[in-house]
Length: 279
Ligand code: C2E
Ligand code: MG
Ligand code: MG
Image 1 (cartoon, rainbow, N blue to C red):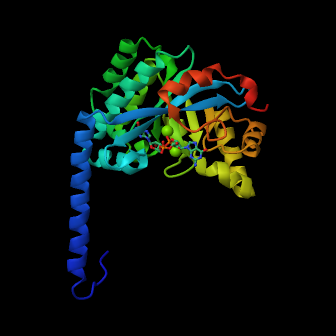
Image 2: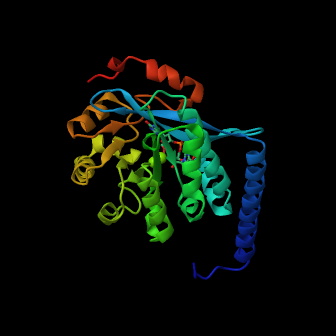
């Protein structure tokens, strides 16, 4: 802001800035320690077929078991991990752990892993993913790498190249949070993807406004046009599930089906009768 700031406000802003820098440095130290101390773990949220009601995959969601602060959710520490570059070792661990755990699930149950754009700038990333699949004995088609559209905002050649290499290996690629942020139909034309997920903010909004409902309709039609799997996140009620079923969504994810659960609870879900979801 180039606005004139009266009197001693400069000192105030300096103090805010200093506090910000210190807070960042502190979380960076804390993250480094936490990686070494193995304080991170994954929870898994089931994703079901809208028609069948059966579990198709689980999304791996990162959690931090902090010794003083308790469980910390990713929205709090992922931005710091991205800024400090610690997302690289952390993200590599996520892929490895998710592949390892998923290899214990019956085929063809899939696993979805979130990947930050910075990870594609790491030259060894694609090889790391392939190595993790090999090591776990997991078929590449059971892994979906989820990226947000923000990865395309920088028009980054490394990202495109990485995504193409993953797909060439048989790994699925999903575009996360579709409909918010940098959404562009051009992304669907230019980038080879297998799946798009409708951001969870739509699940609520589509029940309240015709405009939002129409938007969801359009996104689902886009998915059909480009022949990609569509997944709607944030499904919390039967009404929302019926709504997206009528409009041809492929998959649903949200608290109605289940919140994210510990890895140990995954087998329970796979054993659960499919009839629990009303068809
Ligand atoms: P996401 O990929 O969109 O994941 C879905 C988020 O929505 C999760 O939050 C999940 O707990 C939450 N959610 C699921 N069902 C519902 C529902 O019915 N209603 C509502 N209101 N929320 C629901 P979580 O676990 O806090 O993760 C937040 C975000 O952090 C994720 O959003 C993802 O972008 C990011 N993230 C998580 N794990 C990783 C990771 O390993 N690496 C990277 N780079 N990002 C991650
Ligand atoms: Mg995701
Ligand atoms: Mg999201």
